[in-house]
Structures are given as C-alpha cells and as structure tokens.
Figure 1: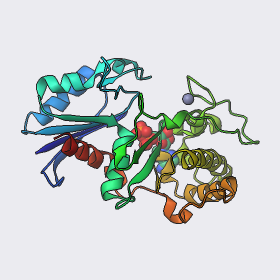
Figure 2: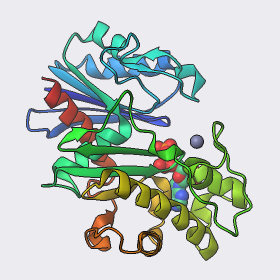
Figure 3: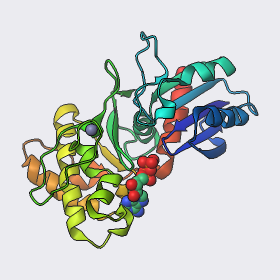
Length: 284
Ligand code: ADP
Ligand code: ZN
C-alpha cells in the first residue's frame, strides 16, 4: 500500500492506494497548527501499513538532500509552520521511504503521468489561488536546483491601467503580488469569485499571467502549461491569456497550438494527490 500527503496551506489531502495507484481511502483535513495537523495525519496512516509515502508540500521547503534541514518547511509566511521538520516527524512514526517535493511539482508530476500532459516528457503546472506557485517536470523529473522554483514571484510589467501597488510581503508587485486571489480582492474590494462580470478585471489578470507564461516558455520550454487554482475557475481567463500570450510572444517561438498548450488540469483537483502517490512509488 502507498501513502500520499498533499500538504496545502489551507488543507491537507491524505490518501492511500494500492500498487497501481488506485485510491483506497482519502480524506481532507484543515491545515491548523503542526501539532494538531500531524495528530490527524497519524490517526489516518496508523490504520494502514504503507510501504512508502509521497509528500507534496506548500513551502518554501528544503528539497536539498545534502542539507541539514532537508524535509523541512522553511521560511513560510504561515509562521506556525516555520522550520517544521515534516519528513522528520513522518519518518519517526513511519520508517519507510519517502518522496518529498513541492505541492506544485507533485501536481505537474500527476498531470504528466495521468493527466493533460500524459505521454509527454515535460510540463509546467501553475496554480493561481491564495498565492501563485509553479512546478515543472522535465524529462520526467521534478524540476529542482539548489532549491525548488518559486515561479510565482517573478517580475512582470505593470498594466497601464493598474494603480494597485501589489501585496507580496517580499516584493510588492511580483506576479503573486499582482495576480493571486488576494491581490484581486484588494485591488477591487471584492472577492475574485464575485467579479466574474467585470471584463477589466480579467483583462488585467490575463496580461500578468500571459507575461509569466511567456517567461516560462522562453526559459524551460515545457511541452504543456497547465493552469489550476481557485482563480482559474474563471474559465473566460483561458482565451484571454492565450491571446495576450500570442501577442507578447509575437511568433518568436513556435509553440504547440495554444488551445492545446495552455490548458486546465485534466485530473482537476486530483492532480496533486496523484503526483504524491507517484512520488511514493518512486521512493520505493
Ligand atoms: P489555495 O490557494 O489556498 O489552495 P484556492 O486555489 O481555492 O486555494 O485559492 C483561493 C483563492 O482563489 C481566493 O483568493 C479566492 O478568492 C480565489 N477563488 C476561489 N474560487 C474562485 C472562483 N470561482 N473565481 C475566482 N477566484 C476564486
Ligand atoms: Zn513576491
């Protein structure tokens, strides 16, 4: 049996599957304090004999196996979780092989193996929700360097009509500071989900996301770009993003047809947990 944890800042999804990755049981618990959350994680996995566990976590996290703080959630704005030894806590209770990467790398891995990028060797997954986070799989491997990518914090050109300063605590007007759900809410004093009918909102949003996708295309050349997260529930964003992307890129690179290149996750909300099960399988 394989175990998986998709550790998000709002909720944790826990699952166990058979060796073919067919999910046997799955639960969702709110992310509260580490003590309380781990208690529930243990209550769940204590019922099963898992031979490996895959974890895709919110971050920043330490993914460098040579580092003393490998397996830790490090400098997260969720202060209760700062310097939490995630893998250490898990290994103490379940001494089995574990896979560990970011929640978005896990989602990219899920989509590559079973979703929108099935049969390809690379893809990029970007979530636009409470924050903006991106992960990628290149040649079948989650993309990591000295650490993991933080694609949500790249710089973008301001839209000429946008007077909002941005709300990233580190950079103000980075992509996340301008385009995540809370940035939309702060700019318009209304929740993003209540602004569906305001075309200007989505034109500005698409401008920022298209710039980001162009940078990712130019730097890592993924075969597919998958956009998930709460804000992307606004389906009208997809054609707007594709149009702006085409106009910014100006045919400099021949991408796949944009309707097939910039897409939503086929696994829907299961991309992350599926990727975590694959991480478990790979850890064995
Ligand atoms: P999280 O990022 O915490 O995992 P979500 O991906 O659901 O969770 O992101 C939450 C953000 O997405 C909030 O800022 C919320 O306003 C926004 N959001 C959620 N649903 C929608 C929707 N249908 N349309 C636009 N924005 C949405
Ligand atoms: Zn930032």
